[in-house]
Length: 231
Image (cartoon, rainbow, N blue to C red; front, side, top):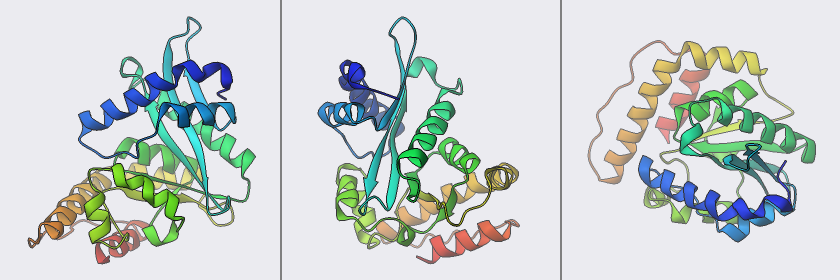
C-alpha cells in the first residue's frame, strides 16, 4: 500500500499515464500529480518499487455514489517492467485493498485492453452494460479528457469504446468461472472488441457498420453482445 513517503513518485506516475495513453491512441481520465499524491497519503493506492527506489507500477482507488461503487483506476506499469506479470499483482493487491476498505461496494472498471479484461475476469468481474455502473456525475466528468468523449455523449452514456466490467460482492461468479470463460473465448472477445469499436466509430461518423457477429459464444457472452450492440 502506498503512503506519504511515496509522494515523490506522483509526477513520474502521472506523466507515464499520459504518455502511455497517447502511445496506445486511447483516452484516459487525466489526474494531476497532486491528486495521485493525495491518494497515496490517504492509503488508497498501491505502488510497486524496487529496493533501489526504481518505480515499477501503480494503481489507486476511487469511491463513487456515497461509497456504493469503487473503481480501481490509473493502473500503470513502467515500460521496462511490462509483460512481467506485475500489472496482475498490482490489480490483485488493489482489489484486495478495495474489498477491505469498502466491503459492501461494487467494484467496476472501464477498459479497452484485453489484458486488463483478462485480469479482471480472474478476480471475478463480469462484463456489464454502462447502466449498471455508478451514475455519479463526477465520475463521468472524468471522461471529458478522453479522446472518445464525443462518442460517449453521442451514445447518451450507454456505450463507448471501453468495455465495462463489474464485481458485485452480493452477486458474482467465482473467479475461476469467469477466468475459464474468458480464456476459452479470448479470440472471440478480441473479435468482439474490434467489431464493437468499428461499429461505434461507424455510427459516430454516420456510416452503416454492417458487420455481423459470427461464432458460437457462451450464454454469458451472447447476452453481453446483445446488450452492448443493442445499445
